[in-house]
Length: 188
Image 1 (cartoon, rainbow, N blue to C red):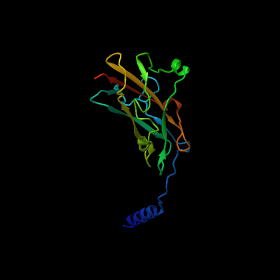
Image 2 (image 1 turned 90 degrees about the horizontal axis):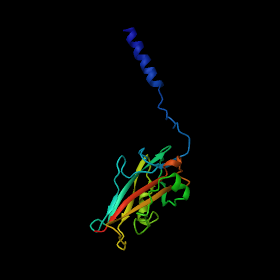
Image 3 (image 1 turned 180 degrees about the vertical axis):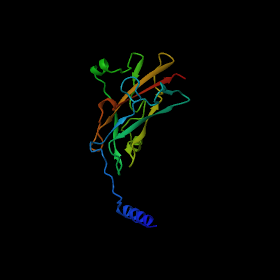
Image 4 (image 1 turned 180 degrees about the horizontal axis):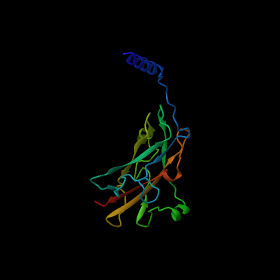
């Protein structure tokens, strides 16, 4: 009986000595974002990880949406953070060292004509990282160009775009800040 009382007293003492301390975050580096990368091809984000699907437009389907996953790196935040995207301007160096996919049969997508421009007010709602979020999906909304001149049954387009760093979010890994949207506009 004496041993049981001593064990109960020790247990009460140990439980009373426990303090619920807040564990600080281990990570102390900068915060940033990058596209999800699925380990295939060049360092471009893929709207459909582990697949080769692409957007398609026709008279019966005048719009299509490709969703790209963005990963938030560093500590999650208690507040909303904003970021933006822009169409990439590929250099001659990119053409040599980076698969652009641009050929005479593939055209560069034009903002406002082939896709909803990244600086369009309709897109602002998608460029917000909600509090306590570690990943989000961002759309690229493709548009059918009714004035397109067809040489064959279809026109293939490619859009290279990138994350624009700001004071709230940085680009931590320069390999994963670009994305590519491939889509076809059919003649029918």
